Figure 1: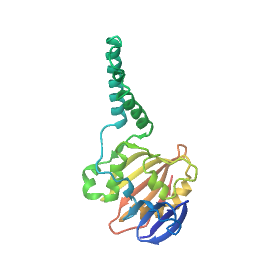
Figure 2: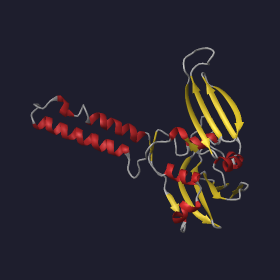
Figure 3: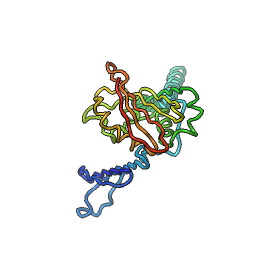
Figure 4: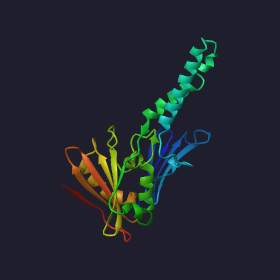
Length: 253
C-alpha cells in the first residue's frame, strides 16, 4: 500500500516521501542548523489505509447532546437568575450576581460553540445492516460512522481532513458536505455509502480519485462512485467490504 508523507518545515516547505502508510507531518519552527530551539511537531498519521487521524484522537467522546446547547442553557439560566436576584433586592445584591462571573461567559461560550458546531449525520440502515455492522464492517468503516454521528466543533465539514487528503477540495473552494450515511449488506458484504453535496468539486475530480479512495479507506475495501443527482450536485461514495481485495469502480446515471 502506498505511503504519502508530507512534511512542512518552518515557512511551509512541503516535502513528499513514499512508503507504506499515508502520513502527513507538520513541523513548526526553524531549521535545526539555524537555531537550537526545539522543533514543535504536529503529526497527522493516516495509518492502515489512511483514514485514522491520530491528531484528533480524544480520550473520551460525548454523544447524544450538544455542548453548545448545554452552555447556552446554563449561561442563560445563570444570567436570568442573577438579574432576577439583583432587581428583586433593589440593587442590594453584589454585582457578581448579575452573571458577569459565570452566566454571561457561559452564554458567550455557548454561542461560540454553536457557531462552530457540526450536527451528527443521519444513518440509514437497510435490512439488518445495523445488526451486522460489528461483525461485517471494517474498523475504518466503523470509525467513519463513529466520527460523523456525533457533534463536532471547529471542523469545516464532516470528513474534511479525509477529503482534503484525497484531493477532493479544490483550492479556495468549500468542502463537500456529507449529507447522509447509508449502510447495507450487498452480496453478503457490508457496504457503507456516503452521500455528499459537492457544490464546488466536479464529478470528474471524484472519478479521478476513486482508486485513491480504495487505498485510503482500505484495506479490504472497494470504493465505487455514483452521481445520484446532477442538478443537486449530489455524489455517493460507497465503500464495500472485499476480503480478497478488489479494484475500484465508477458509474454515473
